[in-house]
Amino acid sequence: MWKGRAPFTMTENQVCKLAGHTSTAFAVATVFAKMYADKPVIPILAYTTASMVGLSRLTEHTHWASDIFVGAALGYLCGNQVMDYTNNNLMLGLNCKF
Image 1 (cartoon, rainbow, N blue to C red):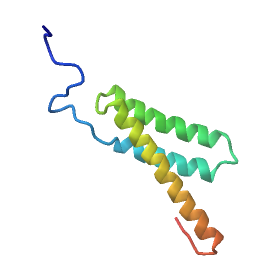
Image 2: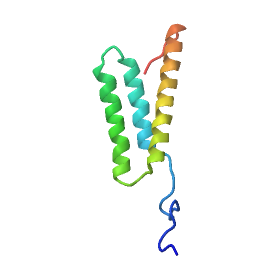
Image 3: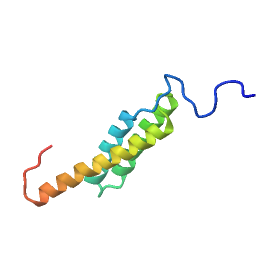
Image 4: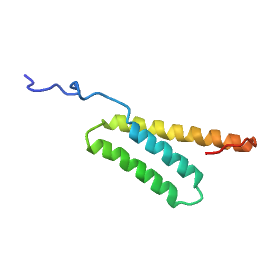
């Protein structure tokens, strides 16, 4: 007979939630990486910093690894959307200020 909590079950305070810090960090990192793609050190620093944010959420036990992965993927996609929107406006000659 199994004693203790069954595997793959969660308690009330162990729920899946989107890693907002990680998604924000990856969105910002993606924007910087695309804006400064001609300087190889900038994308490396940006994604390293974003990865450290994700790892800190994991080591502090505030998120599951899957939450961090999904947050990073969502942030990356959002950052790409921002850059696509910015590039399209600049190609159309629209004034796009940040």
